[in-house]
Amino acid sequence: MAKKETERSLRELTRVKPGEKVNLAKFDCGDPLGRDKDGAEKVLADNLARLADLQCRIYAEAKHAVLIVLQGIDAAGKDGTIKVIAGAFNPQGTPVTSFKEPTPIELAHDYLWRVHAAMPGKGQIGIFNRSHYEQVLIVRVHNLEPEEQWRRHYGEIRDWELMLTQEGVTILKFFLAIDKDTQRQRFQDRVDDPIKRWKFSMADQVERKFWDAYTLAFNEMLAETSTDYAPWQLIPANHNWVRNLAVSEIVADAIDELNPQYPEPDTGIEGFKVV
Image (cartoon, rainbow, N blue to C red):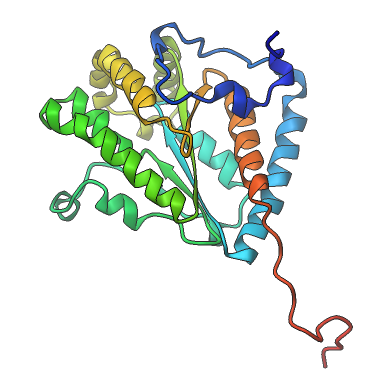
């Protein structure tokens, strides 16, 4: 008999198995994953406390690099997730990179050039707001490359991520899934709030017309690039509390497995009197 959802880790519940077919049109973006909203605030606080401790250890030990990749359609909650998760970390050890339209210099190189340059080093937990996956998403939806070319990127990305993991990078990939009505409401909230209005542009309304095309691209991306060494976690993100709970727990559990430790102090420091 399958475990009840409350008995399964969120990492296990949300993992996309290699080659697994995903149908976001039928995915429940409001699924609470068997968790209770009433107790979510305390659990999230505990998760963030774990993350703060683990990041200190990662930074001090300087042996591991961790990359957190956040993908999702506009208004899926990437910025909000970064605010919550990165809020537990010392900024010195947490570079955050947002990948927007490539510059002319970036376009003069291969598509992984700018991404590789932003990779976290040992002792760092890097966060990508969008990523190299735009090369099989927006490029596909807007016909910026021939199909033969963008399809080739799936294998290139798998190989690149394998190389990174073999070099000691832990890759944690999160796809934040919201439904079309939730996106509409979040866009409307931006329009109605003078403080958030700057985050909305008429281009966002235009992009909504491509919802179905993006859904197909997301489905294939998840199936083609979720691997044993760098699996996708498919997060129902209609509710911020579920999203934050899931991402914080999964990141904390993954870093905990690395077992980062503070370095041993120099000989003779214990009991030393500073003058």
